[in-house]
Length: 196
Ligand SMILES: [Fe+2]
Ligand SMILES: [Fe+2]
Image 1 (cartoon, rainbow, N blue to C red):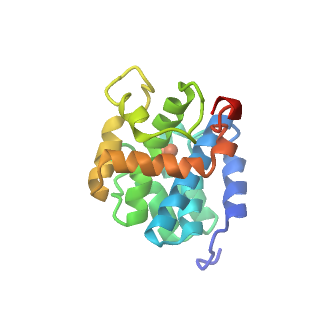
Image 2 (image 1 turned 120 degrees about the horizontal axis):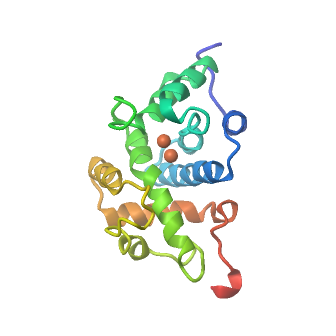
Image 3 (image 1 turned 120 degrees about the vertical axis):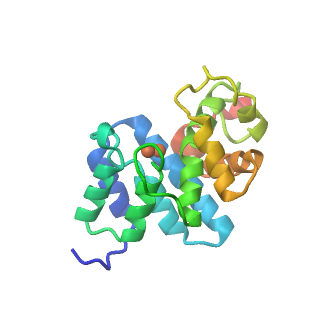
């Protein structure tokens, strides 16, 4: 494989769907992709690249949960993906399953937003509108210390991510919601329009 390959979105989605068949994992991938695209636009960075990395960040999770990130590295390298993409994907598991520390703005953003998309999703689904379109950061903040709510979401990772980026939790959550609004239709988080 040539190492000049620039992955495009179609290639990334095909690769993701080759290894992931679960609806919830696809929705998670689309959430993170939408947020990464939004954040790239905000920062004046490469929207396509940020989105693609967001889309494939959990590539190995369905088939190799015990080797999370390690197998993604292997698969992406075998498919000729550039080091920058591979490194960014692996760095989202920093401190848990990977020792690759997020360094670039892209990597820090992925690290901070990954878990947060889960908390935003769960927070949206318990609202009367079941929508992210009319949701604000305070709906998520309310659930921050409720350990039983979205129990799988590690708040400390999100807090670490916000600190890395030098932004407040409120700002991070607001950006995450704005990013998820751009893909609300695909995520099933537009709610019932009649309820809005
Ligand atoms: Fe992950
Ligand atoms: Fe993830």
